[in-house]
Length: 468
Image (cartoon, rainbow, N blue to C red; front, side, top):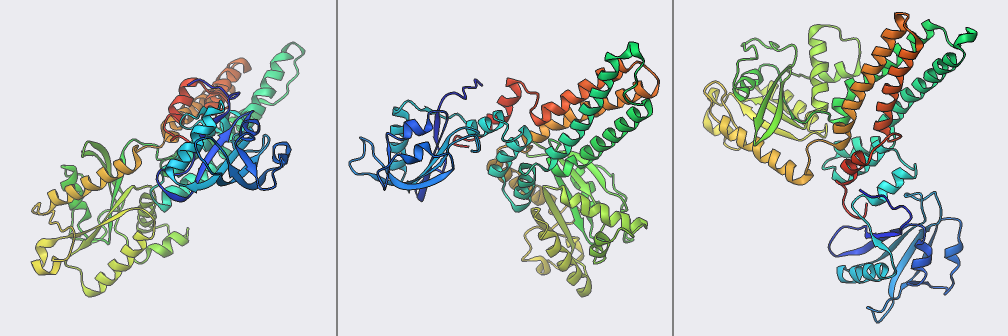
């Protein structure tokens, strides 16, 4: 990707198709000069071009391909405080595709270049308006297909995870400055920082990076697999179903409730997609209390908390409801299912143990299985396959660019900090510690975009649509 921030660019910024309003976006050094030829405000003045503050003006677009003026509102950001860090205009007008195409053509005829995919956000990054993690979050907002995904992307856009990484990087930069200052005065035997303090600061940074990595599954979807979680009340047949779907007897199966105390994981392939299938401990009405309190220290309490954690990081929950539930348990199951639905994670309800009840009981159920005799397993796999296919079509990618790029850099940065800790704690020269520290800082810089290559930017911004 070639960067030409000195060129003025334009693109249609609203969704394709007819609408009440359509938006054209223009940005670059000559934005005001170019649009002054086409846009006439209602007061027939040109004052908006000299404005130092962002303004909105009603007027009309006039160009040869249209015999009458096109009503429009021009929104102008004149300086570096715009999204791109350059003069930027948004033209809001009638959302008719032919009219928008004619307006876009007139703008391009003025010597403005058509923007490439993601070029507005790229300019925002190059101008320092956002960091690279936040730029990727813009794409996450565009691609979000549910409330949970949108919320995650918005948090990332607000600088949540990049702020944490930046704090660690700044601490390491301060430590490196102290070490290098000491190296400059090594002959004078001046100690700018005690060795014990160096080790303590490095251990603190390592702890922060470990915590960020530990959270990365939930916050960055860092694996290339779809995560599907089996959930339900105790003794709902989850473990038997887990064994059937995975093709292996990995889970212990028993008639006793609560046999599964930890979660089990199996990697398999469905519809050509790698899937991470998890079997979790049975949940019950106590789960809410356990989530609200950290006092649960029993095995059952920890299992409940771990189950809820796995739900949060899932792309799909398979809720198992046993067909032979008592009336009381069926009420509890309905309550817990409703709670799982409210988590924002897509959920598919399955009636298990169909061999234990009459056929007419399950006549209205979408998916029924008997894992004991394999009835309905193929139908369930078809449902999962259909769901995966829909996700693939709606999102295009299963893994966010942040995850692909960031996780490896975080691991390498953590390794560098650990090596620096080793050199500092074993009394080796500060030169070796500084060398490892620079490598760790460089990796964090690649995440935030303070250090980048054309290849990194190509991978990030090539996934954007035009106009963003």
